Length: 164
Length: 150
Image (cartoon, rainbow over all chains, first blue to last red; front, side, top):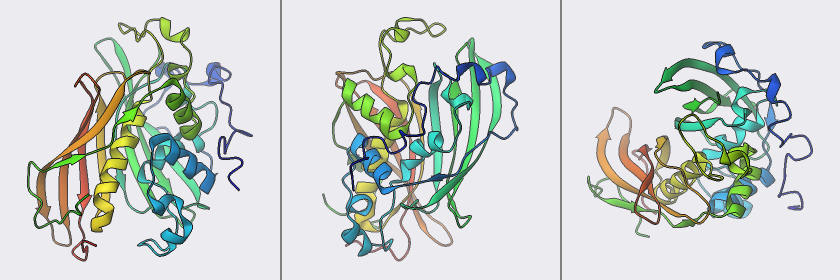
């Protein structure tokens, strides 16, 4: 069952971020307020398990079906910070968040309900602002993740420094 | 770990997270887990170049790896008490590189009771093995009225 845990999205996800680099918007072309293209993504238990391994999560609510079923959520859930994965899983290869050299400057996230394995996650996202500070080009991004019932899972904002 | 209780928590109480050894493999694993394959985290040749006025001198860990470690610390602390992680704001202050050992920590800043619930604000930070703060921020956790330690 865990045979594909190493690369749950490897079959479809382009890991060479240079390949589509020219298709992506530069800072100059990013329009604050304009929606980003997004894709629905089915969150798997394998993807959750791989994320847990990467940050050392051992909580049985994320990993042990029997324990999670007896717990407060009545089944397995994903860790709150699974949006780290969802940000890339729910956006296409030409999304500017993948531009090589994009440096994350900070983020803030609010959590409503947990994502669960088997959820089909959708994202509403846009650039909210862009500015120049100390010769660096910043973009503020704004994101809301939903489950298949239309419930908000989490929402967040972040700032990235754009490659010149 | 002692289970926390909203009534006895007070400003200045600390939360300790586990140490995390950063290696090329841990960064590579985070690439696979997050699908963030930015060459910042993979390509030493690329990282020999300058980023504006900054030169990192080699690959760096994902900033969001800090975010994931802080989250793990907070949920491990809050969940046994029936508390819910509601918000985390972070900013990255220094790059983290292979060979570093980082550790998240938190300090209770304030408690707040609202019309329908109870909240705890926590200052959070991640430090490296030299005691330098590499990430800092603030978290908000909800202790519902019904939350019982247990």
